[in-house]
Length: 155
Image 1: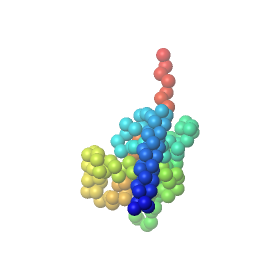
Image 2: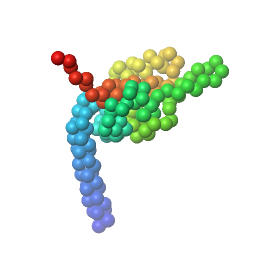
Image 3: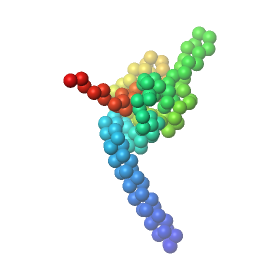
């Protein structure tokens, strides 16, 4: 009985700690890039992983292709004979890649446009793995646009 009570208290303490860390992460993301949390399927934990991958100098990323390569979602040719195919890049930042995967899976469950895209590409003969690869690249492109600083307006 005593052990169960200690275990229950420890679970409550850890739950409170998780909530506090999630609150701090959300606050930090809102401080640096509040528009990131407006992206469908992107939570504060995934946003933090992507911000860490981009670093504190997003200007160093010359293009969305370089950000995609950094996240490990740039396509790599895998052709043999007459078969031309692309596969996911296994390099890059694995945490950022996992964050993009979580965003895509969330969108597949909750976003109507993403589900329609999945149906359309499935009818075209693509596998679900290939569709997820395409969606990860699309999400990386969208996030890259949000990470880039706005150009000053000429007066």
